[in-house]
Every structure is written in structure tokens, then in C-alpha cells.
Amino acid sequence: MKNIVTRTITGAGFIAVIVAATCVHVYGFLALFTLIAGWSLNEFYGFTGIAGWRKRAGIAGGMYLFAATFGYAGGYVSNGVFLPYVFFLLLLLIGGLYSKTSQPVHDWAMALFAQFYCAGLLSSLNFIAFDFSKAVYTPVYILLIFMLIWMNDTGAYLIGSRFGKHRLFPRISPLKSWEGFWGGLAVTLAGSLLLVRFFPEAFPAWYHWPALATVVVTFGTWGDLVESLIKRTYGVKDSGTLLPGHGGILDRLDSIILASPAACFYLELLIRN
Image (tube, rainbow, N blue to C red; front, side, top):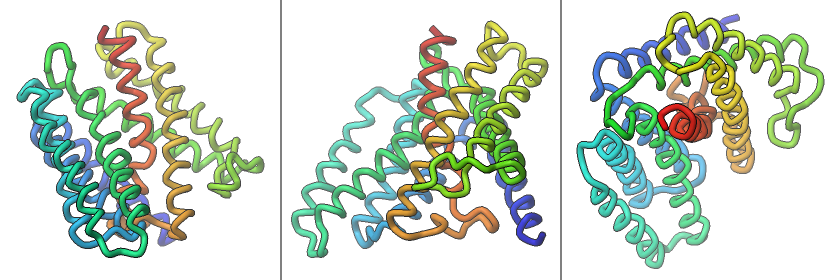
């Protein structure tokens, strides 16, 4: 019971911070998610054994990538803003030649994969937040994707914990069930149709709501499984301890990390164009 209360309080606080930072000001969005990208890298490097200068440089590089993508998507800077990041990646590779760790290739692989996984994929949120053709900040899409993820998490947990019998992916996540997946999808589809009343201007036709909900749930579930596989490989239960009752930032954003680029493709291909 105590854990449920802790999870609820922490989850509500996390939601409040996301909503406030996204809605109050565009730079609130930038500040929060740049910090989230950096902390995600800190957690990832922590449980994969990346330390020292490579960890510090990786965190700084990932935060720079998110901020640079924000500037580019918002029309504040040209694509030249990515040149320092490319140079950073080269230095990361060259620096590995002089590393005296016992597994230099592993450290290379994890340091670079973390940039793609934690910072690169998360940076797609910038192209959701901005209408790329107009460089106009539209926080409603960020909020909608998070709401769809939260609906799915709630539905999957409630239905899966009560009726789950058939394992979804036992090799990676023994507790996830097909009943939970379909239950989460059903709740999210129903919730998406209710949201039409509150955000009628978001999409040109009603059917985009359940379509986007399906994309977000599917890729969000894969995102959860991807992080579960990474943690299982390294023998950790949670990515961190920042959020009591939930674990780390990566544990809360694992679904968003894959759902956001998928949602970005949907918006750019079928809505904005």
C-alpha cells in the first residue's frame, strides 16, 4: 500500500512538472528536457559501467544535442549547429584509443549507443513541439503524446495485474501480458476519442486520434521492452533512484523514447504535410 501511495505521489508530481514546463514557456520545455536528456545519460552510463571523462563528456554532448535540435527545429539556428556535436563524436572515438579500460570496444559501443538512445531519439520531441515548416511552438502535441502514454500505462497496469495470464515477452519482461497490452490499447483508444472534445483543433479529422494512439501504444510498448532488455543484460532492476516508487528517469521515459520519433513521423507525414 505504501509503495502505491509513493508511486502515485511521485507520478503526479512528475506529470505536473512536465505539463508546467511544456505549457508555461518554450524555454521551460527546453530547460526541462535538456536536463532530462542529461540525467538519462547519467543513469545509462552508470549501469553500463561508463565512467570518468567519457561519462562526463557524454552527458554534456547529449545535452548539447537536445539543445541544438531545439534551436534547429525552432528556426533559431542553421544546421551548422550540429557540427560541434559531430566533432564531439569523433573525439569520443579517438579518445577511446588512449583509454586503459579492460573493454575499450564495449565502452565505445555503449558511449555512442547512449547518444543515439538517450539523446538522439529523445530529441525528436523538438520536431513534435515545433511545426517545422513554420517554426511555431505547439506544446499541445507534446502533451497529447504524454497523455496517451500515461493512459496506456494506467490501463495496461490495471488490466494486466487483474487479468494477465499470457506473457507478452517472457524472455525480456516476465510481468507484461497480452491482456495488459490490449487493455492499455483499449483504454488509450477510448481516451483519445474523449480528447477530441478538448482539443478539436489538434487534427483535421477524428480518425487521426485513434490512429496516433495506436502508433504511440505500439512503439511505447517496444520502448519499454528495449529498456527492459538493456537492464536485464546489465543485471539491474531500475535505471536509477531519482523517482521514488518508479526508479529512474529512464524507467519513466522508456516508452516516450521510442514513441516520440514514431509520433513525429506520423505528424510530419500525415498531419503537417
